[in-house]
Image (cartoon, rainbow, N blue to C red; front, side, top):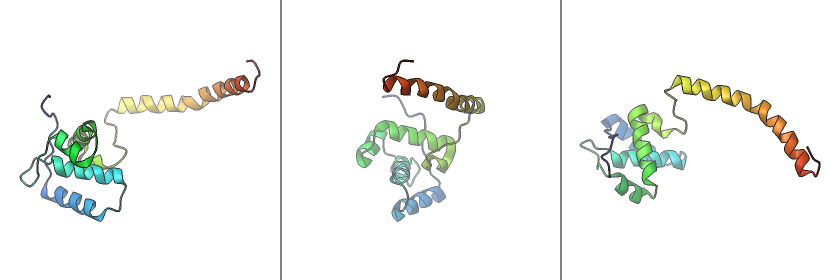
Length: 123
């Protein structure tokens, strides 16, 4: 297995924030699981520094989920807990926005054809 590319080192402030976040348990399960992943993957002095396999077995998640959460934390900090992480590549974001703006016009034409076909009429 290749060596980890992204290592999690939580500050005391981040660790206490995540511990409090997990202990309250009033947020989405997905966010709480991400917080638990970060706490278990923490390689600082206070953290257990568990491997991806150990974390995935302890929490019942895929190893890829652990790796992606760790990567996201290293690149974005505690924003890794959120569902939507900011896109760093602005040109990619602009390209995606343009594609999405073109979808409604293209799909409305296709919908009419599909509707006629399913209703027994030929296009």
